Image (cartoon, rainbow, N blue to C red; front, side, top):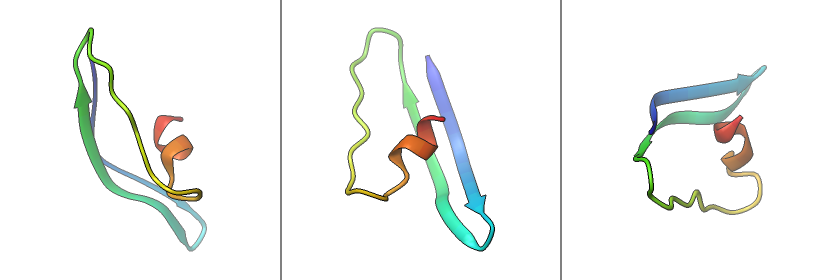
Length: 45
């Protein structure tokens, strides 16, 4: 299982990810969707 609660990430003055929360249980297929620059890769790092 992966659980994220209220994740925030800043690069200087840029707030790249703000308050992201999600849970993915074992055996589930989960997608993280959004436009370019939305913070998907940053969230998973």
